[in-house]
Length: 309
Image 1 (cartoon, rainbow, N blue to C red):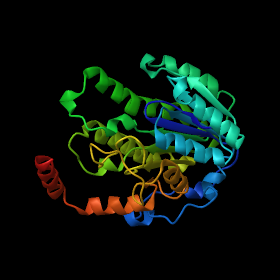
Image 2 (image 1 turned 45 degrees about the horizontal axis):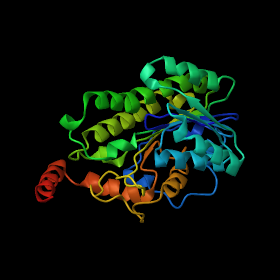
Image 3 (image 1 turned 180 degrees about the vertical axis):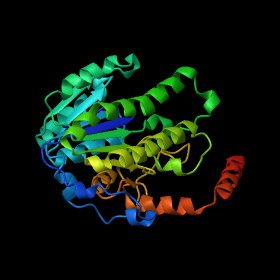
Image 4 (image 1 turned 45 degrees about the vertical axis):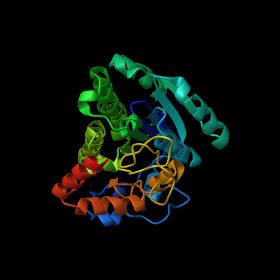
């Protein structure tokens, strides 16, 4: 069953079958090999064998997170949502249960209370075979803010949601995964972490943490049958502003700006295939082009753009 928490987003899947450990190799391929064809109608075989019944998801109102949870529900994966505000996901949980016939649950957990929040999560996970965890960076960071303009409380909340909660949730599910020698952890950050951008200090720092956290986890636990993936999407169509989008206009749907459900469909197809990817091949093209630009040229261009904006 997936479990969702509200730091940005996190999903955990509960395993009830064996996992093909051959999928746990290191990711040493060039960036272009992460570009994939249209997503298949079923989960990749190595991961499909790992996540037959349960997923745990930690989420809030993040559109990508909810779309990812729905994509898992389409594959008969039950979902547990962990959130400090049940109204944010209550309707989503009911809709998934009614539409796909999967078990869903909502667990209230206030992570500002430190370790007290983990008690309710442990109780909800008891007796369940958690096979998957998905963490997602907080979408509210997409709006441009200068660091000195952010209140101190907002900064502390940002660190708690995007760093502490993701790390804590991973710590909670890893022992069971290691014991069963199977499981998957997916951290959804942002492609913005590949280049610095004005007004996106908090987003880039949070995304960078999740990306490096994922890579370190994969190195440490891949030989124990656990697949850890870092997803770095670029713009996703929604009512919110997205990284690299116009400050005055919300992102619009297009080939490079997919709907959340389209992105989730493609991203799930990369499970067990690549441990570091954008999850959507047009975004992989964007990532490759950005990495080809020397950083000094990128910084100079950003300053010129700001001077005329």
